[in-house]
Length: 175
Image 1: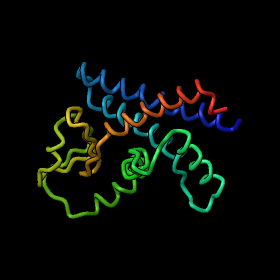
Image 2 (image 1 turned 90 degrees about the horizontal axis):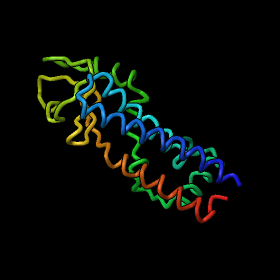
Image 3 (image 1 turned 90 degrees about the vertical axis):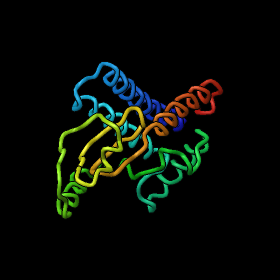
Image 4 (image 1 turned 180 degrees about the vertical axis):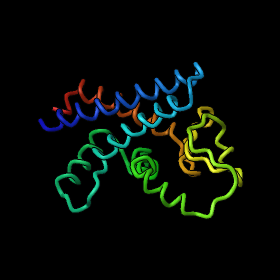
């Protein structure tokens, strides 16, 4: 019976993430301002991070959480190659303040771009450009403090999880 409750929470996080991805894509098409557009991709990826914690809980000492994660990975046919297991992007958003501390202490020179940008991710490769936040909708890349992260694999995995959840509900394996 507990799997049904986890399934509802997983579906909620996945649906919120996909809605934010859809909002992001609409904003790109309508050339919305960079702040709103970046906020949408950040929201999508933040919900994806919440989803990730159901399957790969933080804290190895919590045996209950570890058992829950293992069982949910089985039910949702997930393995350790899942894009949701990749925690660097999640941590980059969740610990942005700490990463900004370290980034600002580096010996950076050149031009600084602290506000969000919508552009080609190769812009972040420029030696004199210091990009804080950039999203490349064509390349499927999000840049935070100069580090690049691919987000389309996460989006595809979330869609697969929702589809798997629907199949599980239909076959009543979540009950």
